[in-house]
Length: 234
Image (cartoon, rainbow, N blue to C red; front, side, top):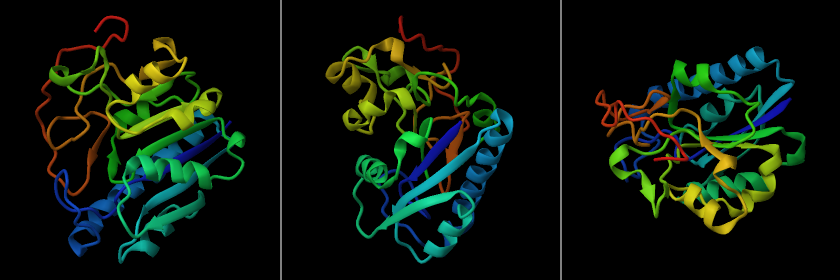
């Protein structure tokens, strides 16, 4: 089994939601901490699931730390592209897909926002052999729906090989589940979450058991504690 992990988004970013500050010296240590958690995760799943290989594609933005960033992933790196201007997660994702050679060689694609530190719980629950498109979580219970479809956490996405034909239909964002149901022949049987608890995507606003965003404060408050997501009845 071979996997492709795409790390996308602004690296060495400093500040809260909406900030465009990146590449400062103050952002370095935390971003490198996130990158090292990515490497630990890769080594963990290779060993746990006896994967043949895991390849990495990095799609981020230029900073003074470009060489430092790329060197972390060097052992697994199949390619990278660093933009000058902000183009958004969706464009970074699709640009990465277009730059991956021989995509059919990979049994799954997983994208992870590059400024996430991955927690042990993510290591424990991740299973590359699941045959569903997986979002990490549904957003907090008070804001969990888009026209009666789940409103998803957009920090990660797992896509098994059998769904690659739908990649062109994926628009990265909170509406992705809704859009796939509305615009393709996919059903709720094909979509799911990595865990069945509700967590907002921004770990500054709501506790998340899978990751935290580096260079921001991490909330210790879990606003939807006690609520369980059931895709067929929520």
